[in-house]
Length: 78
Image (tube, rainbow, N blue to C red; front, side):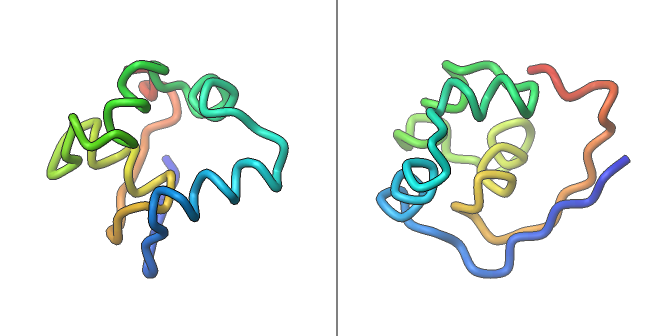
């Protein structure tokens, strides 16, 4: 199990710039972290608010929402 903490949230444009600097696409990020690409896009676009559940988990791991989550690495796929 891993714990992830985000204490200063990024804006979506800041997140996109960060991924660009790292040379990663959202698709690559979602595959690397075991999340469904469409779900990640919905969190980024605001369709999925990220108040709880998998949306919250994705938002915290992306760094666009402050919070702390504990992830069981064997059950990350959403």
